[in-house]
Image 1 (cartoon, rainbow, N blue to C red):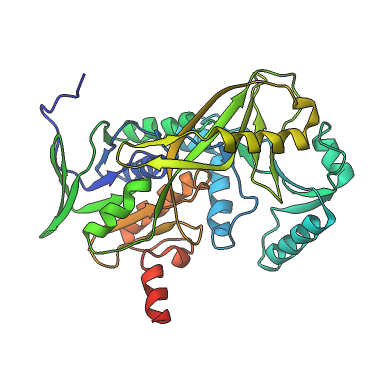
Image 2 (tube, rainbow, N blue to C red):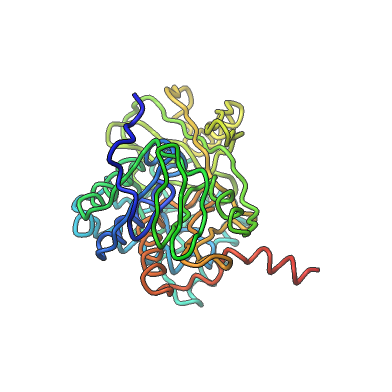
Length: 383
């Protein structure tokens, strides 16, 4: 049944387009500060990238520009019950990135040394013996790893829902099955046209994921965001054998075992996306390659059945880091998109930053690298 159009509130202080983690977290942080929020979601909250990811709460392996945000966000993850009233299924398991050769371990040593020089100590190098203490079933050829002991994982949909419910308790209004079609600035107000009518507010937040580039272009900001599908698969139940989230230095992998024994396999597994029909098409050949990586590293899993695979749509940026910034073209517009398959852990802090930008125009954390106009500036310099 289509939602009713009757008696919809049209006015608020901020309209957020997009019900993924960053939109929902923004709604929470803004509402908590007393700002009246309306969130518009085309399908249902956490439908795409925010619900179709491996759920890694990961500071490990971040782009250096993201490290301050990831470290700050992890602190919020560890206090989710205080922040949103529940733990969002967060499990403090640690995360490990395996090195399969001495060359890979040398790359890891260099990275950790560079992080230490920047003042960050959350990643540490561990040797093969310590790896086997953490991962008793790992293949014999593994020579070492990076270990981030305070990282963990969560169930994406449950974590996003925790922020959504907390935002609603603070007064935020959510409208699912309400796709934004057109945005327009008239005088002091934003007007957002939807099939259910026009919503208005002085501020607008563009957190529409793979569809954010279209809204940015409506205000004259061309951003080279690319939509791609993102896949996950999960196995039958197997006896417990691993606690940390596992990644690999030399090949894509994000791998964890849940309390019920099932094993979730992801790690930026890309596939084709149809942004018009809003779905990602599962690529079983790509999944087979990822399954082979898993069995190379954990040989005892050979023969275990994959019981389900699914896909959603994610926004990827050419430089692999997101857009988190005020618009350079339109007043009272904040962009937060393009998290390139690693935005889940940043959800709690991303919403805080958006709230700060709306309320004061300034972020408490360094976000200059995430400016929406960085690509046009680079093009101008090259020209």
